[in-house]
Length: 90
Image 1 (cartoon, rainbow, N blue to C red):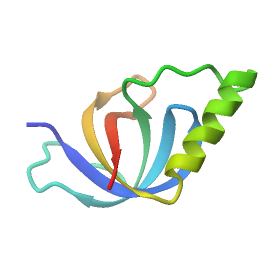
Image 2 (image 1 turned 90 degrees about the horizontal axis):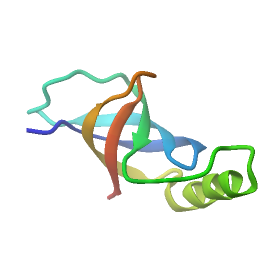
Image 3 (image 1 turned 45 degrees about the horizontal axis):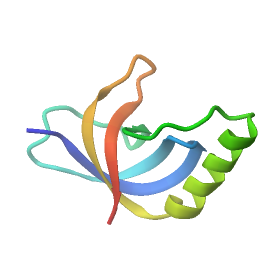
Image 4 (image 1 turned 60 degrees about the horizontal axis):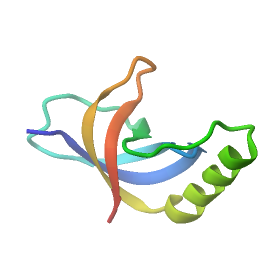
């Protein structure tokens, strides 16, 4: 079974990475999570920050998701310690 965490999007780092304030976790979760988690959104391919496209992608994600409640279906953690997850606005 896949872990699920819920939270409010606090910060958009770039076009595929956000920071959420974790407000709820599934009782069936196998891992523990911090109060603040950096989430790498799966299945998004964006340009790097600093490029015109990368900066535009960050703004698009901010407009779509900042301050919204999300459900994160956790896939793994990457080498940088970010939670890799499918993210849905709820």
